[in-house]
Amino acid sequence: MNLISIRLPSEFVEILDEMVLQGRYASRSEAIRLALRDFYREHYASKQSTDFRFPNVDYTYSNIVFEDD
Image (tube, rainbow, N blue to C red; front, top):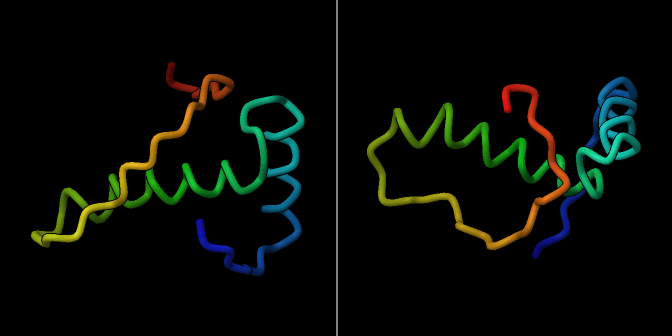
């Protein structure tokens, strides 16, 4: 994996930390990776005709609880 740095408003960091404390995600990084994956799937993959596909990374996310599950 690659390491990148981003700047987020403190409110976003607090939300990430709360989700990690609740056990919804193992780390901030995991939450951001999944959010980016979902964003891509919803807003890019279905609306663009391109050969690019989001990488299918094999992770185990057994601790994630989604609101709509």
